[in-house]
Length: 430
Ligand code: NAD
Ligand code: SF4
Image (cartoon, rainbow, N blue to C red; front, side, top):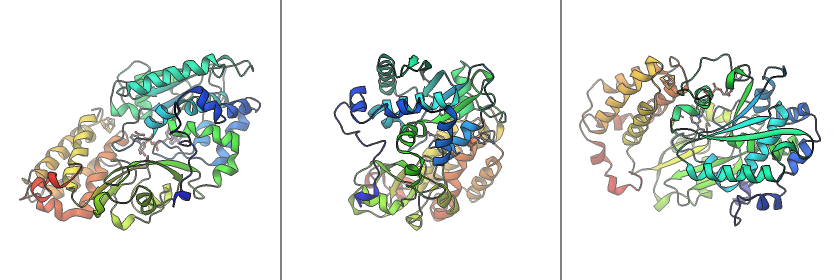
């Protein structure tokens, strides 16, 4: 089974001091940058396009296409902004990547910046992770001292520098335009799109906003070639990705594997279900994606197959819940989260998530009313597709999918509290 794994980004995370420049260079670090600097910027964009890599932040938009959508150079500044505001419940791949191997991201930023004509890139980091902030600052200093960043990168007269910016802990600042507002010093709220950031992003200049894992994958594509990358994964979801297994598996953690691996294989790689319990439900891409059950264990985890099965691959945040867990209680916690994180800009999400939270908490307490399930579904229907950004839609996904697969648990919530149906002491997580 371990042949299924493709440790590339995670290859030497277990090395002592894996985060230092010396370790990275021992593993061919910055060789891709040296090669990239011998190439024309357009050739780098073409290689990334040819690899067909799709964004690893959740939406799966083709990275090379995003770069080529940027307005043509006009002599003014252009920006690369790395979205490192990883905050999706269950998602935990970018933070370990930046802790274990920050130079893979920095090398990716340097190559990508050179490709799109950016001289000053930003890494927008989730503010709560102070340890990652320190590690990135140190790694940027090391890279600058070694000539991998600065005014004369690789002795080629190319200027590339990086500012690491820590946000203030709002989930909405992971939405790319809210992130840009926050970076500009404003309250982070989503902007109207279009214009997309490629046309008018940071300081109204052409900007590419890319996920940490997407950018950290670029050095491999440059060094090994786009055919190497396309040789893994599926035809429309090429390459590899970090799958984060959390919850009721024996050995939770990061499993780097080709896209298209199944949950059944991943659970086996994680040592099976904890305590030999039965799987009840799981999320393919964090709490924003409709839940799956044991019916979906053989769905290939690529963008299209997961969508065809009724969910989204998202950030490959595979949260596993066994038979001891109340789906109502789990969904109620996610709903609390979305109601708390709603930025308040648009009415369907601001008001709707508040109503969803009241009803979910009522059902969890065993005090639901006869029409609560219909109300939940109706409110979700009025949020979905009517909200200003993806947060509103995301809040509805766990609810509508849980009602679809576990309606009887919601019905039981009209008379019996979740803690009686699923005593927390019998469950590891709740
Ligand atoms: P989106 O589909 O609107 O956009 C994805 C990317 O493609 C953006 O960068 C956007 O600018 C670009 N794009 C889309 N259409 C374009 C066009 N016509 N021209 C140019 N560029 C275009 O999705 P989104 O709202 O940016 O992101 C939603 C995703 O974020 C969800 O799938 C979710 O899984 C993920 N998410 C991730 C986290 C996390 O912690 N990593 C947190 C919350 C949500
Ligand atoms: Fe803000 Fe929610 Fe509207 Fe997004 S959907 S703009 S988070 S209120």
